[in-house]
Image (cartoon, rainbow over all chains, first blue to last red):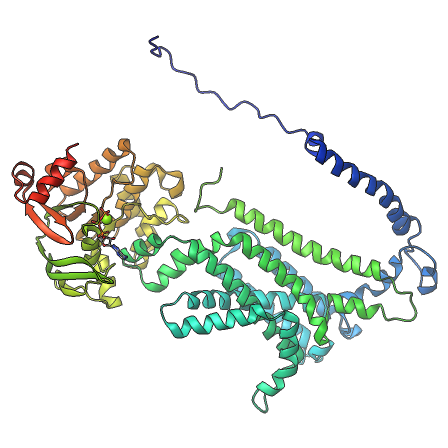
Length: 362
Length: 241
Ligand SMILES: Nc1ncnc2c1ncn2[C@@H]1O[C@H](COP(=O)(O)OP(=O)(O)OP(=O)(O)O)[C@@H](O)[C@H]1O
Ligand SMILES: [Mg+2]
C-alpha cells in the first residue's frame, strides 16, 4: 500500500500534438455533413455559371459596344477605374490625388508595427495630413485650386476615415471620461451627446449637418459640404468610441486607481499611464468592430452628394456609351472595402494576440 | 511621525471609525488586528487619504491630511502602501511597475529610476523576473513586487493592508520574510495582519480594533500573555484555532 518515490520522474519535451485533420473538421457529424453537402452542391451549380460570366464571356478589352450581350464587362472598369478611384477631380491634376493616396497609405503602413508608435510617428501623421489637404485643395505652391466639391473617390474615403478616427478617438475618450465624471454637468452633457448621436441614424445626421448647418452657423461663416459631413462623422464616431471605451474603463478594477494614487501619482498620470491603457486593451475587440463600421460608414456621404468611392462608382455607371455593369462595379468596390476592412480586422486580431499585460495568454 | 486625534469616519450612516486617536513615532513598527469589519482598512486608508475622514485631525509629520490634491500627493509620496490583492499594473513589466512612480513623481530619469527599481527587486529577491508581466508571477512574487514598488518612492512610512491574506500558505513566508527584513531597517511600519507570529516577532506595539474603535494597545508580550479587554481575549482565543 505504501508508496515512496525513489527516482525523480524525468522532465521531457511535450509530445507532438495530433493535428485535427481538415477533412474531419469539415465532415464530422450528420448535421455538418448535410451543410457541407448543400454548400458543395450550390458551389457545383454556381461556380461554372460564375466562371462563364466572369471569364469565358467576360470582356476585357474594347469599348461599350463590345460589352453588349456579353458576360462581365471588365473593360468598363478598366476605362472607368481612374474615375471611380479619383472622382471628378480634374484629369490634368490627377497625379495629386494619386500622391495623396500613396502618402496616406504609406503613413498607415508605417504606423502598423508597435515599435513605430512614437511621438515621431504622430508628427509624421500631422505632416502627411497637412500635405494631403494641401495637395488636394491646391491654391498654394503653384498648385491650381480645386474646390472640395470636385474631390472624390478613394482620397475622400481615406480622408473621411482618417479624420473620423483621428478626431473621433480623442473626443470619444473625453466623452467616456466625462460620462463617468463626478461632476453632474459633465456627466449629463456627455450622456446627452452620446445618446443623441447613437439614436440618430448617420444618414439623418448627415442630412442635418448639410441642410441645417447654414442655419446654425453664425453669419459670414460657411462650411463646405465636406466639412459638414466630416463634423457629422466625427461626432457619430466619437459617440460609438466613447461607449466602447466606457465599457473598457468599467473593466479596470478600482484597485488600480487606488494603488496608483497611493504611489503619489498625479491625476493625469493615473489616467494616461494606468487607467486608459488598460481600458483600451480591454476594449480592443469591440473597438475593432467599431472602427470597421466607421470605415464602411464613410460610404454614406453619397447621400449628401460627395464623391467617395461608392458614389463615384455609381456616377460612372451613368455613361450612355456603356451598358450598365452594376455587378462588376459594385464587386470591385466591395473588394476594395473588403481588403481595407479585412486587413484592419486581421491587424487588430494580431494586436490583441500580442498584447501583453492583462491576462496571461495561453 | 503620524498623529491622529479624534478621527471619525462614516460610510453613509455607518460609523466606521469612532474617535480614533493614535500617535506613531518615527521607526515604530505597529501591527493592527481585529475582527473583520472592525475598521482596520479604513483606519490605514485614512492615513494616506485614500478615504477622507469626517472628523478629527491626521498629521504626517508637519503635513495635515486633508482633501487637497497637492497635499495628498505630497503625503502619498512619503507614505507607501501595500494592498491585500497586490494591485500591480498588469500592462507594465515588473521593472516598469517599480520605476513608474520614481519617474513621474520624483522626476528621476529613466535610467536612474530603473537602476533604483532593479536594486529594490534585488532586495525582495525577484530581480530575475524584472522583465515579466505581473500575470506571469506567483502571488508571493507579485506581493514582493508590490513592496518593491512602494519602496521605490523611498517612503518614510509604509502601510500594509493584510499583505498575506490573498496568498497560499506556502507563499506567506516569503512575503513575511521580506517584511521582517524591512522592519529592521528603521522605516515606520503600520501593518494590518492576522499573522500573530509576525506580530510577536516584529511589532513594537499591537493595536486591537473592534467596531471602529481602538480597544486595546500594548506590547506584543502584554497583548498575547495578558490581554485586558474581553473582546481582545475573545478574538485571541478564536485566532488560536
Ligand atoms: N466604501 C464603503 N462603503 C460602505 N461601507 C464600507 C465601505 N468600506 C468599508 N465599509 C464598512 O466599514 C466597516 C469597516 O470596514 P473595513 O474595511 O475598514 O474593515 P476591516 O477591519 O478592514 O475588515 P477586513 O478584515 O474584513 O478587511 C465595515 O463594516 C464595512 O462594511
Ligand atoms: Mg480590511
